[in-house]
Image (cartoon, rainbow, N blue to C red; front, side, top):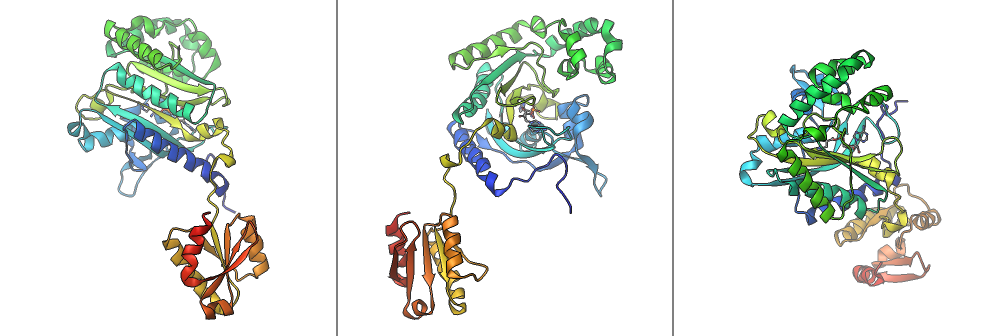
Length: 418
Ligand code: HAM
C-alpha cells in the first residue's frame, strides 16, 4: 500500500467543513478591509527564494523542495508567499496602477521541516502584503488585521510580540556590536552559527539551540541601535496599536526566520498551541522589492498558518450548517431509475440539493440511509407513479407521505420551506 508522504496530511470530509469556515470567514473579513486576493503559481525559480529570503536562513539552506527540471531550470515548491507576491507585484507593474496595493492570499506551502504537532511539510497559510506605504499606519493596519481576525474567530490567549530591527544603518552598526559580543563564545557556537557569525550574525539570534540562547541572553539589544527615524517609526506603531486596544510586549531579540525584514517585526502566538505556538508572523520589508529587481517600494505583511489556527480553534459542528442533502430520490423499479436522474437534475436546476441511489438498493435501506444523512424529504417513485405523472413526497422528519403531481412538485417542495 502506498501511504502519503511523511509530514503531509489528507483533509477528509469530516474536516473540510472547518477549512471552508476559515476560508469563507477570511474572504469576508478581508473585504471589510478593502484587500484584494492574489494567487501565484505553486513553484517558482529557486533564485527567487534564495535572493528573497536569504541564503543563510533555515528555509533556504535546508528546507526547500528544489529540483532541476527536464529543461535544466532550477525550481522550488514555494516555502512562503512574500517573495512570490513581490515577484508578481514587480512583473505586473502593480505599483504603477495604484499608490498602495493591499493584497491577501491563502495557499499551500512546502518546507522540509521535522514534522510535529502544528508543523508539517505541506502546510497552508493566509496572509496579507501591503505595498507603497512606509508609514506606521500600514504596520498597524497589518498587525490589527491578524490580531482581529483571530479574535473574530474566537481565539483567546493571544500574545503579540513586537520588535523593530531598524533600517540598514541600524543593523550595520548592530551587526558589528553583536560580532564583538559573540567573539569570545565563538568556539561554543554550533558550526551553523559559526558560519553565520561572518556572513549574517543576526541569524544567530533566531537560534533554537538552548546553550546558544543562554549565550545570547546578555547580547546587546538592537533597540539601542535604532536611528532617530527608526525610533520614531517604532514609537508611532506602538502608539497606534495602543489606540486600537491591541496589547503587545516588546521582545528585543526577535529577528524572525527570514532575512528580508526591516524595522517592524512581530509574531502572534496562542497558549492553546504547544511548542509550535506561533499563529502568525510578519513585519516590514522595505528593501525586498528593490532586491528582487523592482522600483524601491516600502512594504509590510504577515502570514498565518491555517493548521495552527485550526488547532487553536475549538470549532463546534453545531455552529456550522452541515451541508446535508435536502432531497433523496428513490426509484422502486428498473424502469423508473433513469427517470430519477432526470427529476434530480431538474430539481437541482431549481436550487435544491438532491441525491439519487447508485446501488439499486431497496426502499427500506434507502429510507434508512436518508434518515442517517438527515435528508429532509424522500421522493419515492414506482411504476404507478411514473404512469400517472405523480410522485410520493415523504417528509423524513414527520414521516408524513403526500401524493403530489409532477407539475406541482417544485411548488410543494418550496412550501415545505426546509
Ligand atoms: P513564517 O514565520 O515563516 O513567515 O510563517 C508564518 C506562519 O506560517 C507561522 O507563524 C506558522 O503559523 C506557519 N508555518 C510556518 N511553517 C509551518 C509549518 N512547517 N507547518 C505549519 N505551519 C507553519 C512567513 O512565511 C512570511 N512570509 C510572513 C510574512 C508575510 N512576512 C511579511 N509578509
